[in-house]
Each structure stands twice: as C-alpha cells, then as structure tokens.
Image (cartoon, rainbow over all chains, first blue to last red; front, top):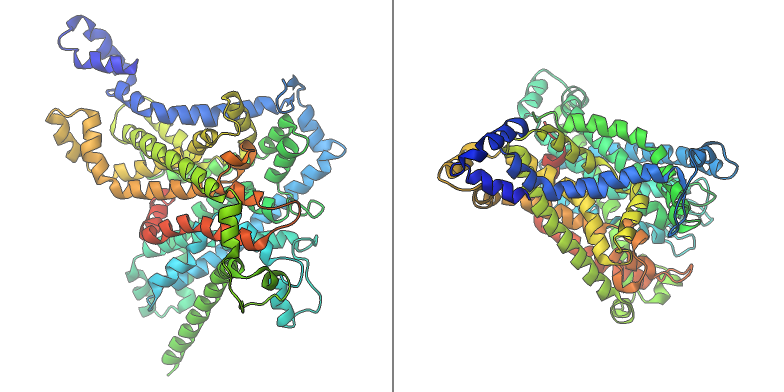
Length: 322
Length: 278
C-alpha cells in the first residue's frame, strides 16, 4: 500500500493531475511521510501489537474472572477488591508489596555501594587492569537463571553447601545455617545473588561516567589541597549524579520486576518471605489457580509506580534529543 | 614522609578492594566448574573445596542422556532469529526517526523509549493470551516473536543514538546523486554504523539467550525448550542433580561469556551510549 504511494510520488512529475493531493499530503504529514511510515512499520507492529495491545488487554483482563482457555466473565472491580481487602489473597498481596519494596531497596543500595567501589578501583591505573575489568564484569554475561541455580547450590542447607562449609570451617558457627529456608535470612540470600549478578552493570555505567569527568578537575583540586574524600565528594559525586540517577531508576525497574532469582532460589517461600509481586502474579495467574484476570490485576496495581520511574527516565534519556 | 605513607595506604586499600572483588566474582564461578567435574561422592559425601578426584561423567550424562543439545539448538535458533530481526527492524525505524521528516516523529521516538523501559514481567499474562490466540503456545516461534518486545525497542534506541552522530552531509551527497533512501541507508549509513550494530547484536543475543520467564510461561514440551527452561527440567521432583546441572550450566554460560569476552570493549561503550545520554 505505502509502496504504491511512494511510486506515485516518484512519478509525480509525469502525472501533473495528481500533484496537488500529493503536495497536500506532504504538507500535512511531513516531507518524507510515506518512506518514514514504511520504514517504521515493522517497529510499530512490535510496539503496538506486542506491547501496547497486551497492555490494554491486561487492563481489560484485570476486570474479568478468567481461567486459562475459557471465556472471561466481566466482574468489575472485584479482582482489585479481593486483592486489597479480601480474606486470603489480600494478606499475601500486602506481604508482596512489603517484600518487593524491601528487596528492591536493599538490592539497589548494595549495588550502588559495590558498583561505585568496583568502578573507582577499576578507574585507577594499575597492571592487569584490563584483565580484572573483564573478570569483574563477567557475571553480567552469565544467564540470571544460572546465577540463581549456582547460588541455590552454594546456599545448600546441608554440610556440603559451599557457604555452610566455609562458615563451619572458619568456626563462625557450629550449626548448619538454613540460608534459604529460614524466614529471616531467605530474602537477604536472594538479595546477595541479585547483587552478585548485577553489580557489574552499575560498575560499567559508573566507569563510563567516571571517564567522562575531565582529569584537570582532579589536578586542580589536588593543588588546592583537597584530600581523597574531598575530591570524591566535590568532583566525583556531582560528576556522576546523572549517571547515578539513570542507573538507579533502570535498576529499580528491572530488580522489582525480576522473577528469575526468586523463582529458582525460593519460589517465594518460606511462608511468603521472598514473595515479590511478579512471583505472586505468576503463582496466581499461571502456575497454581491459573486465574489470569487476578494475575493481570496484581501486575497492574504496581504499574503507576513504574510509570513515574519511566516518565522520569524518558525525560532524562531524551534530554539530549530535540 | 606522610605523603609516601598516604600513597602506601592508598595502594593497600586499592589492592584489598581488588582482592575482595576477585574472590566475590570468582567464588560462584569456581563452584560451577568444580561441581561439574567432581564425582558424586565428592559432591554429596566428602565435600571439599578442592576436588581430589576429577570426572567427566556429568558432562557425558548431560550430553547423552538429556535433550541438552536440543535445548541449545532451540536457544540458538530463537536467539539468531530474534537478533537478526531486531537489527533490521531497529535500523529501519531509527533511520526514519533520525533522518526523515514526518509529522509525529517526536512521539514515535518517545514511544520507543517508553516501550524499552516497560518491563516484560508486567506483561507476561496478556502476552500469554496473544501467543495463545496466534496458536504459538508451546512453539519456539512464539518465543522468537515475544523476544522482539525487548530486543526491538532496545535496538531502535541504540541506533537512534548512533545515527544522530553521523553527519547528514554524507548522505545528502548520495541523495543528490540520485540515490533512493533505501540505497542511502544501505550503502552509507549501515557501513558507518557497523560498530553500533555489533553492540546491538551483542545485547540482543545476550538478552535472548538468558531469557527465562516467557519460555517458562509459553513452553511445555521438551522439543521446544530453550536452554534456561531445559536446565530447570533437569530437576527431578525436589532433587537437584547438582553435578549434571552445573555441567549444563557451565556449557550454557559459555556462549554469552565468550561473546562478551571477545567484544567487551564494546559492551562498556554500548551501555554508556545506550542508556547514559548527556
């Protein structure tokens, strides 16, 4: 369809009668509108068909009682009502809100501190720097599911688990520690695995940011007598502010919505201690009861929060564009 | 005196920091490798940090007694198709957004960024319905399609950033000489943008290879499983056969790791260009 319009555009000279409408269209839709929409078509099919449409259908779904493979029944706000105030589900839901918030915040803070430390260490000149940078960033390339499996094995609650082996041998405790099965430790255990996997991303972002800070600033500060901490506070931190905000927002979105680690390590247990909201949505919507409508509602409740993050990020990421 | 002491302290702190991150990074990786070559006796009975005996049994088991190679094949197929499509679709869209003049251009650019940021795990339930209605449940083609949701916005966004820095004059000359837009894109822009395309390919490959949630929700039968899903399938009931699982994990980690090691210079610059603007 659009191809034909392009062809007629090229022949516009030979067919003077069609000229006014073509010029009119170009005036309204822009000089290259036909080519542009042709080039954009596949991308728009993906954006609209696979992201916007599922999103709208998620909203519709959240107002239905629907099981997999059967037609849905419109129930209005009933799903949301059950989620907020219902008998069984609401306590699970509010627990997942707390767990997700704590999980995301704890992981973000650890990643910030470790990522910053890693980037600062790698930003110095020393022998073997290229090698160590490659090594430290390696976890980034390991599939998160495999990271989860590996940590699950390291956390094994018997004496053959690596971490139990280490704490026993170092004499830190005489009892085996149930890293993943104890209510108080499980969430921290998941946080550590997540931090291991995604600290490299933060470090890469920080390192790129550090290298963009002009070296003269540091030299000038040194001449002025600023010590290491002074230079960090007055040059490094302000220089990295934008990168830090973008990284923190990206990481918050990805961490809060990630399911792989929790799925492998604890499956949400023990007693919901690690039940983040995507895990709950999965269990309610797909795995157990297969209540698709309720599953969609659980994910959607959190969307306004992500919308705010996405809005801020979009503005910052498009700041350089016109 | 105090100056050289300060330098010494600084070096000590630096070395200690590197040591910490070295151990932190290597420990889990070491444990994968060591578990995969330990005989079961040393895994479950006489656990030790350094194995006194080495075996290839777990690798042999995974390769001959499980459909592991088939999983890898599926992962390769899904990854290659998704990556290739994302590169083509992203390049075309980015070119239109950067170089062509049409009404609605800023809105399309914004839509690309927003969709890049919407996390897939918010959409897996309605996505299930879309794939279901397309008849692609339990079919790797369904994965090839859904993986476009995270690779295409990313690829487009990366290419937008790169095309913006290519001077328009290069292309204008070709257009004046009578090149069409398609020719200008293929002969002028794409060759210049090869480094960016490499970054896009690298990230799309890694993201697709590592994906798990969509595979978990859409795929059921062994013949259609990708690597990540197949790994979980090695679990029998509540028993984790750690030897074979770590052997399979090691083999499944190699492709993205090797790709990363070969192109790590681009990874860092790619991340910087892709998400840190200004």
